[in-house]
Length: 151
Length: 162
Image (cartoon, rainbow over all chains, first blue to last red; front, top):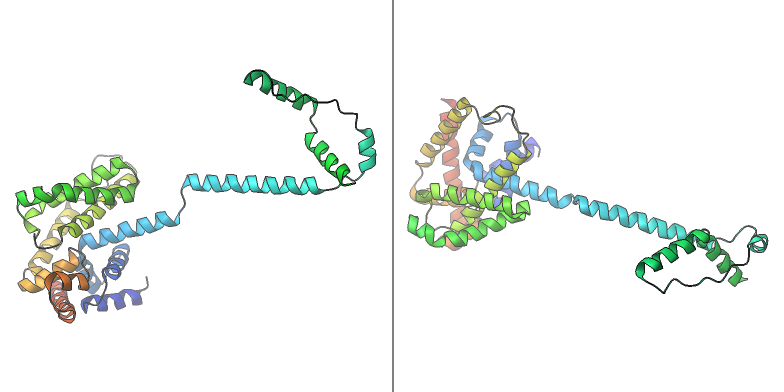
């Protein structure tokens, strides 16, 4: 708040025209200032500690509402990263292989894969990871299958 | 306000100030501390509280000040020496003198002027709320508040120059 604003509010305060919110703003501005003229010192004194304290309370609350919490920031970062990853994956899957025919020819005939649906949960997980190890290029295969289906 | 009058409304007031603390801190521990401090402050100044006035409004204002006070303490790095960071004896003396000067100045106001001055400065009520509570017309409230403030302002400036 500029000196001019403070003086304008001071004049309105003395005329009894200020609202409680304006008085809190004035109190906070006077409190945050180092050296005060006699007039402003008197006004600050008249407003009392309660008004200045209340103004500080409001200022802290406003600052907190404007600043998101660490949890919200972390969630936003994670969601953004996930969105970027999914968009990238989608675009990558849309690309056509540069040498489709040769790649398809080079690809060995895939053995039929038995779905990991039977056994205990531990067995299913172990089965799943074993199959993933034997087929590391899953995304390449999906992409190629999609391309071949289009042909 | 008498002690028994305060005791009758204490539970209700406590809930109100506890909510103010919870809004501010977001945790019950600090909110309880602020509520406790507020009730102690109100108890100390019991005889200065007018039963006819809005005690809840005053309690909330005091609660907000207590919240800020606790918050400041939490933000301050623990002083190396005991007592460091608190107001010096000279500062405490100056604060007492200033408060006495203000009290003496306010005592010069007429009862009606003092009442309206306090309703604005202490209770934080708006002109409309004062009009509702006192039944005095809005322009008259504004005029009386202005007259009271100008009187206090002039007297304070005079005393400061001495």
